[in-house]
Image 1: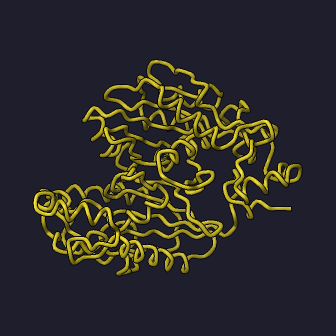
Image 2: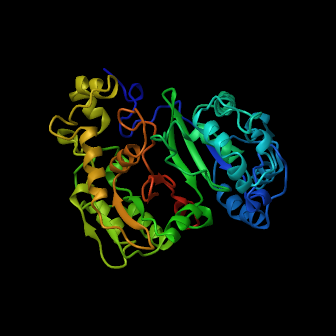
Length: 428
């Protein structure tokens, strides 16, 4: 019989060999403020950057971790030292070499090197700035450095890596690959991006999380100011089925006591919003009520994946009764209807995408959409060029986490993923 750790993409399957890396981009530097390319150039943090370290340090003080690694540049060292004085410096996590663009303003490179930039960012074998690193060289260096960190980590361990926005691009890209363009922004200063490594692959658990600085990132505020529609995808609070590892699907489980508490904390952190849509299932509606100013609009198309005869059962129960189906779906990637009479992953993805596309967005405020882990993961994956069978590159978002997507002229942009900073406070 197959076992939970043999299969990837199975709900609640957490292999024993899981490892985690928490990537943090350095605090804002003066060069960030001045709009300069500053790959390998050293320089100070800005006044705002120094001030932001207090919030980051307070948040990180609650984490358990095995060690902290940082790039050797001042902006990363100071950020890492706000977390701990015991910082291991690794040259391989330094920012990318941008060649002759170094020290120039973004306006100057856009004016004088626009064609060169377009080629270098399209063909990843072309050196940046004429004589810098190519993006493929940056990617190889970044992933080699990640592998070194994983080799040092024990099973079940966690490392913190403080590095740079450019270097993080090739680490994020395989999990949120673009469709002829980048579908996510450069991560923000002091942002947190978490990768979970299990079953010989990495999964994006959190992306561009600046929740310690407030519920709306700079990118969210930027798009709202421009008049760009932004949706906030919220996973419901915890249920007893979550605790027991049961496949909920369309089962109408209410929030448990902890789930109610999570939803209330979410409401205080994220605030009340005028436009809130939700799956009509209890767990989603109860969560949505905590962030709604004018009531909640139930939308059936936001329901979780229909699991058919598997609903309410645990992995062990399903594997015992339907071993061949589990094998075909999760090992051989045959997208069968779950539980014989349920949905396929493809059907879930199309349903949720079509439902969200039909919603009437709010103006000047995020449109809040409260749904489910599988539904949110399938939707975010649909905005990328991934070839994952079941969106395995994305980890299921945490209960009451928030994911923002902006709908610009060139298409959707995933601004962040699975932000749950509110659960790491004194209340959480």
